[in-house]
Image 1 (cartoon, rainbow, N blue to C red):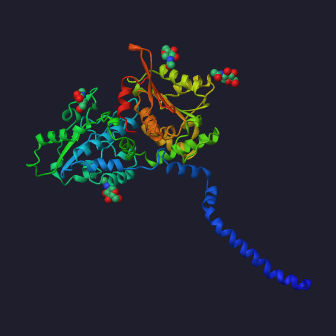
Image 2 (cartoon, rainbow, N blue to C red):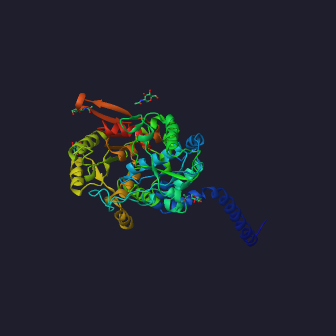
Length: 451
Ligand SMILES: *[C@@H]1O[C@H](CO)[C@@H](O)[C@H](O)[C@H]1NC(C)=O
Ligand SMILES: *[C@@H]1O[C@H](CO)[C@@H](O)[C@H](O)[C@H]1NC(C)=O
Ligand SMILES: *[C@@H]1O[C@H](CO)[C@@H](O)[C@H](O)[C@H]1NC(C)=O
Ligand SMILES: *[C@@H]1O[C@H](CO)[C@@H](O)[C@H](O)[C@H]1NC(C)=O
């Protein structure tokens, strides 16, 4: 039998040994959970933001169908396309840029990446340039150039592209361009704007170019120049996969998207809304998180969209029936209209919040340092993740958001007609996104926004 001092001595050896074995045994399986553990201890907000930035609502970009289209075209060395820089908001600029790239694919040309004309403010849409052509600023004013370069060079390696005409200063024959347009190459424009048959376009462009510069006589590089071309390619006539992915080559600048993430984080915390930054859109039955509302009544929209009273009535009626308590108001309109709308919404028991109310400190300063058009893109990032969204059907921005959401979930949406004759009202909805008064311009936008 062991005496107690000997037992004690034995325990002194055995206990640390057992503890060491237990520790070793427990550390190894815990290793797997280590990542999860550090995730938990990282700053919650930073984690939300980084999850948001690395997960788009429609999953990872897939350039397969762009690659197929590019591979099917005839590419001509020494043939260049440049495009006029569009002046406008995010929706308009994005569509013009995508049409420029799309046209270059049909043409089989090298592309000079289009620029953007910066609007000073809504009241003065285009800066006065003294009469010459406006050069504009780099596309990085809105978009992520690195991503464009990566996605386009991987999916369409046949297309060479150049950041600027300045990079081609040593090719004198490129300095004076020849005009080219959809109207001069494709005569069947539906509603005066939309290409009727994209399968004819490549040959039509070739014929047109051949008349100006027969390829057998051409010895020097040649450049064609396309005016701003909006709402032109019929997205439903393209392969559905292509339509879904093509617009994704133009993604929003990361620093701007980061502010969208910060807005969403503040929204989820302050109003206790469950938002999963790694997920897509919530399922139909879980869509009552918050409504994103686009009120487009700024001065530059005065002649093309319904006035405040009409838009606000449509939106507040929608809020009244939506069973959602929080409305995120995406707008660049006056504070008077914002408070009027906020009051109207409160009458149906809906609380209105804006990015300006949700951001603070450095992030609010960063928002205020952005131009009016860039701030709208912060809204765009938030609206994509809303359970529901609603806006005016004549706004390309609203279509950009609605169609991207619909394509992410595979919902096409339907048009609902109210009234007859001149008084008809068309509302488009896919269950999660609703656009009012689509008739006219809205029908063209529905057919031509890539998203
Ligand atoms: C695109 O990226 C590649 C690789 O980083 C680079 O070599 C190329 O110059 C870039 N293209 C443009 C137009 O900047
Ligand atoms: C559009 O294309 C179709 C099929 O190619 C053709 O039948 C029709 O006439 C065209 N429409 C217009 C307006 O040119
Ligand atoms: C708003 O809430 C109040 C108080 O709960 C209620 O009396 C009123 O009926 C609600 N109004 C609407 C339009 O839902
Ligand atoms: C149709 O329009 C009428 C008149 O504007 C309106 O009262 C009614 O609520 C609308 N119906 C639907 C289903 O939107």
